Image 1 (cartoon, rainbow, N blue to C red):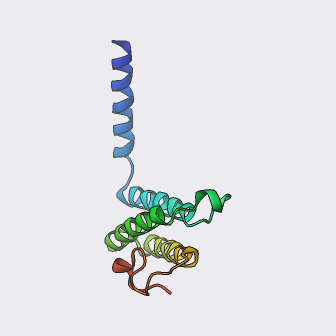
Image 2: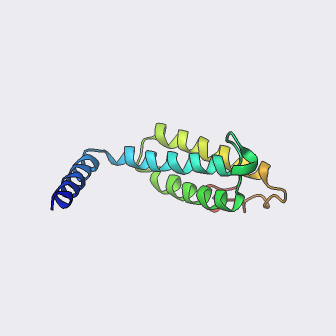
Length: 117
């Protein structure tokens, strides 16, 4: 029983904690996690040979582009601008890491952001 009660208390605390966090902070935190993971998968980390996975990067960048595009009207321009800059950086890193680059406008996330070159 004690384990269950402790678990219930931890769950309640986590729920209270998330209730205290503003929407902009949650959105930007999620975007930063996607951005960081995409950068690693594009080979922009300590061990690019072992960590590069462009299939995974494509998925992460597309999800990030969708989130940033959808959230931009809801978050301040300051937050949206920095997320767009990071997104553009990983889109360009993806293009550079690709041995056969996607046509302009067809790269990851470009259906949401428009062409990146």
